[in-house]
Length: 342
Image (cartoon, rainbow, N blue to C red; front, side, top):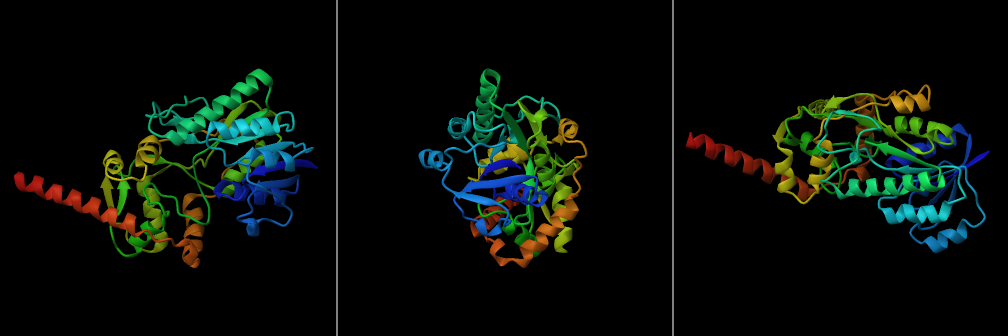
């Protein structure tokens, strides 16, 4: 049986992949992590408890091992993929790296995005770090044949959190709470820009199809849903599932970025405020039969029902709530002053 090692394996994206690999039974799966969420793992999964940032300890624990596939789900900066290269050079037939679709060029020259779209993001350090990681890995592939596969997810969600454009540090619950309380909800821009939401179970289908796939070596793949939505559709669908009326309050993305410390310059102007339509043709050629099957209104209903059923997922954020009120109040005051001056 083929052997795979996941670095991480219990996050939004990786949990679904871990579950699918375990269920399919085609791989012997090992996870290397600190064991913080081991209780959610399928019993078939083996765990190596270690902190990947402690390279010396990890090297000892992996001594003598070889892998058919290694995937790092928690590599964000070049130093981390350089460490992985040292640990796994000559010891894996495939190294899969989770990059980000936010690495694609901003501003977007065209909303149609495929793997050939240039990588450049002057707005978000997170994205530039991902680009630098890709460049290091592809250089090692070109010069040494290091068997890298680059994966670029976009906005992927699971049953634990509702995906949104604007939220605070504690996640999306406060926005849902505002909806339930009949308060206005901030939507960036005018809500008509295009976006794609991908359920993590669909992402797992594409990802596992690339594991051990010879057509995946030395190249990059984006994995997203084929469904394109406006932000108005996204927020309206969430409100419909909650059974409430959506009261949108539209605010320009650059205004939001300038009046908060939530890094909205990167996450909005460098990502979510840009209209994008993802083309998954390359993935479908490499993984015949890949078809996303969870439409947003289906996936978000499962997520919201789960969040409402588990108070531990309802993390309130009074700081963000107050900021929303201040933004709305300031804009309403400015509107009144301009109207009075007419």
